Image (cartoon, rainbow, N blue to C red; front, side, top):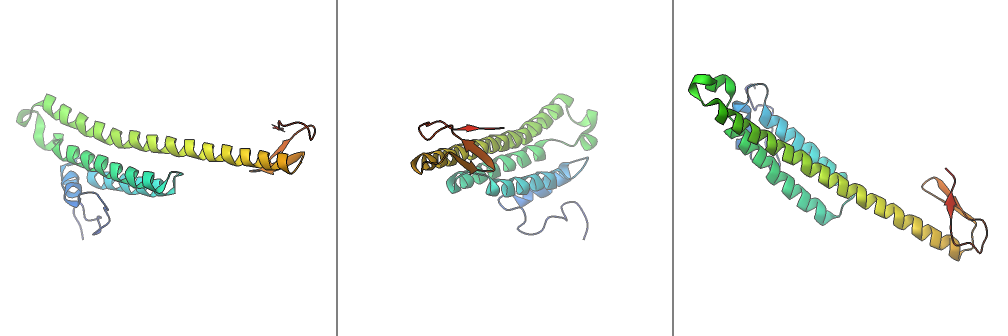
Length: 168
């Protein structure tokens, strides 16, 4: 029924350590940080599966994302809750240092996802260039003055011309 971490269904965490999720939830003061990291992880996994990268790259990306997310959970568990430690019970500098480490680990997950998204965009652009090149070669071979690809019409001035142009 209730309590921190109650929203976590068995097996929902995938590759993340369920005990770390629960401990991060208990350690957090503002909201359930373990569940937050887990939701971000699951959304990133879904996104990776839809990206324009090879299956091997997807597997490697999921493995790396799992490692980074587990590291973020470990760092969150080690970051003391400022409401329970208080100024008298724990050194403020150490508290701030552990919190900054947890923040850096979460930032590493976001940076890695940006890198994967960028790779996907590069692959998509390369595929579009290959399609365009193939369509141009086919148009040259079939002696066409124009062709349409991806909703864009490409033309050439004469059959002797080997260069195509697109009207914006």
